[in-house]
Image (cartoon, rainbow, N blue to C red; front, side):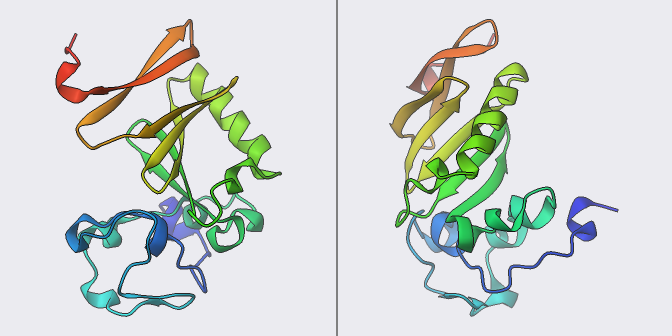
Amino acid sequence: MTAASASERTCGDCTLCCKVMAIEELEKPAGSWCQYCKIGSGCKRYAERPAECRTFNCVWLIDERLGPHWKPNKSKIVLTNSEDGLEIRCDPGSPDAWRKEPLRTQISKWAEAGEANDVTVLVIVGNKMTLITSDGGFNLGVVHSDERIVRELDGTRVVNAIVVKASDIQDS
């Protein structure tokens, strides 16, 4: 049984993913409502929704360890997994939602554990990103699809982070 099928949670009245996520197929940028979203109700064309929407997994829906205060329409945050970590996508109308307790304390714990395990924790508001670390974070600004975040480490601790063109990174 997978975590998704074990979960009893449903979106219900939450549609925040329809705002914070970019949907390439619809040319919908992150941070704006999808034209097909009926806010608080769901997708007006659910059966024909894009593949990006079909494969999307909201971490709150599948991880029952997250309490009700993490539900996106309450927290103003949508948690998503990425290839190398956790993405905390804030509603642009509440860009500091991730700084509020008890969310901030848990995010700090994830960042600390992430450093020890080479996992990144990113806060994303619209198209701007902040890499969260055990010592705080690094404001990265806009990170484009052809760019990568490069972390400078002291042991496992992140001491700096920069954004570079993917083509400038040499495979080792």
